[in-house]
Image 1 (cartoon, helix red, strand yellow):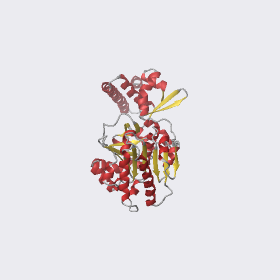
Image 2: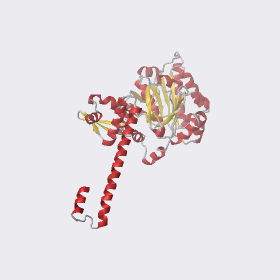
Image 3: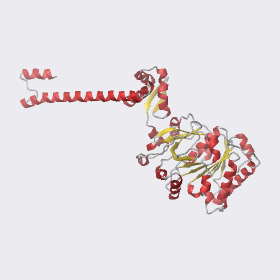
Image 4: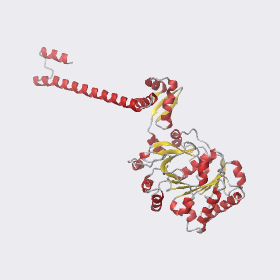
Length: 425
């Protein structure tokens, strides 16, 4: 281009119409060319440094290939399995071992088209927000810089309850808990309405029913009867892959108005929902549950003590037991039943709006505490005393579906998000 420009000047042709501009134009072109060379050189140098850093940080060539896969998908968008394998310079038959970890953690989405797979990059945090049904206005509340407590003492196997929440509510490792061992020690679930309490309770019930452990639920909400229907919620189904879940399922069981004979329920290993939604008076609701608990206690008093979980009881709206409309002895009766049944292999889960309704002795008898979002000052004071002030500061702003889980056996409290339901939400 510069040669052609010189030829025009030599023949006396003006390029710009002004002698001064004719002089400035080639100077500008030379400066732009030099700047372009400098930028390109710097970019290639930066790329080389990043590649070298990746190679030094990665313990194996496999880790390097995985990093390359993410870069390809980020730059090029969706790629077929053959295209991605060609870019990685590996046999397409070996592609799955590089990509599957990212699919399982929700970073990469895989969609089958014909006989090949199409891979694309996903944002697992955005998917989780969708699962928790946030609105865009709510998202800003949770997207700020949040530092969450860490734990390194979780069991490495057991029932999958969800995933650890890392800083800024990102997804971490899976939360495994052998429920046969821990449910017998008692669980207290608390939090504001709509924070995710019942979902967490149903996750635990689903895991136990898959192991054929009978579950009896005293339900005032009519939500639990959907345990016997397959999940058809498209948002939840979309998020199954984030938690290593396959297809939905319905669980065996029945809805009753009164608790049936206990021995038959234990043999079936199914779910029993005692529907109390038609009972409106607080004292009558508590009285019906107390009658059923007395029936269960009478049966197990003739049984030998057991370290194996035989039956799991779920009591919704447990705060009703401390209401002014019921006798003060009701809470003491509930505490006594929980302690006596534990020795017989019966676990109890109390689901309540406020943990501060229960006295410290009752709370201490429940080995696991699951705390969902709440802004109630009484609960926050209780959380600060038992779990620490840092935890109490986090609880009011936790997203829907997230909780703090604490057990004396597990040590430090930690934040987690619960998996979707197999049954209808």
